[in-house]
Amino acid sequence: MKKRANFFRHLHPPMIRQRTLQPSSTLGLGIVCLTCFLVLVATGVTLLLYYMPYQEAAYDRILHIVTTLRYGRLIRNLHFLAANVLIVAAISHLARVFFMGSYQGRWLNWTYGLILLSLVFFSNYTGYILPWDQTSYWAIKVGSNLAAYIPGLGPSFKSFLLGGEDISQETLVRSLALHVSVLPFLWSILISLHLWRIRKDGGLAAPEDESTERLPSSPWLFRAELTAGLFTLSLLLSLAFFIDAPLSSRADPLHPPNPAKAPWYFVGIQEMVSYSATLGGVVIPVLIGVFLFFAPFLDRNRQAGIWFGRGRLTLNLLLGLILLSQVLMIVVGQWLRTKNWVFKFPW
Ligand code: HEM
Image 1: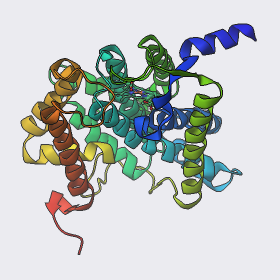
Image 2: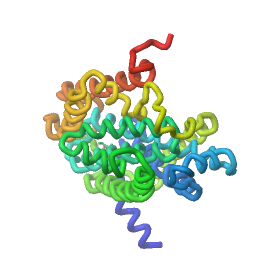
Image 3: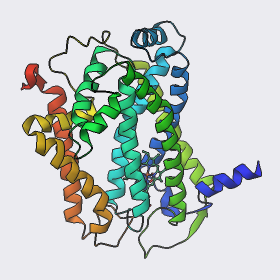
């Protein structure tokens, strides 16, 4: 018991600054991400008890889960919702850290965060194919073609993802293995490092001139974390009663839908590729990645922990522009593209 308490103390600071408790300093987004991850593990393990990674069986097993099993639909809905809320929450968390300059003196944890974000996308992507329905089959087909644009690695990364040149039985087994073992394992390590690093860095970033008066974590921080966690859980549960995880008809490799779209979080890239393959598929994504990675070094303003601090205008404008343009690309790709990728307003 004592050992476990010590281990927990290693990940969690015993004392915190008073400002850490103010909702405006974190918006609780790190805890929202953490709660989504825990919900994903709990629901994922349950789904795994009934799932089979075979082309002939996968779709029927999902139907069985949602139509026959008690709470099966609810658990699948929760898994789907937590995965999607996590994408939005992780990007919002990144934006809050960025706009507060909280990566100052924390570049290592910022980098762990960027790796975590890649794991969020990768986990979502490998889970997408598992229901083996028409939407997921073709979304993964489009997605893997987009992966081929990654400079240098593209074609080999695509065949690594698919377990060959095209989607097959091999893809299902590989996606399941990555989705339920390799990626959650990496997640656990990275999340532990991320939380431990916050403590090593002296708690959340704060302006240097701020009073350093500290409070014990127990009970204040625990209460705040519990509130954010329970809020996320109730949000996911309430949504799960009303929003069903999608399941279209069984995958049909011979009849592509028109248009075939990537998963929504990659539709922005698909939209950009429709203008220019090199610019949209390679140059812009690489530039965004490089910008995010080097942001802590580009920032000359040493004030951390302040929303939209002075002297950071250009960087903030750049990130704002990136986020807005990506949202725009996703909206256009997802809702304003019809047959043959023709642009059309729905009204
Ligand atoms: C996806 C899973 C993630 C989880 C579970 C997670 C969890 C957390 C938690 C609990 C905190 C402390 C409270 C808070 O800021 O809300 C935190 C802080 C932090 N996170 Fe994350 N995070 C994740 C992703 C990211 C990403 C994508 C980035 C950025 C690239 C990032 C960078 C940071 C940094 C630099 C801090 C310290 C901020 C400060 O000192 O104010 N994290 N994270």
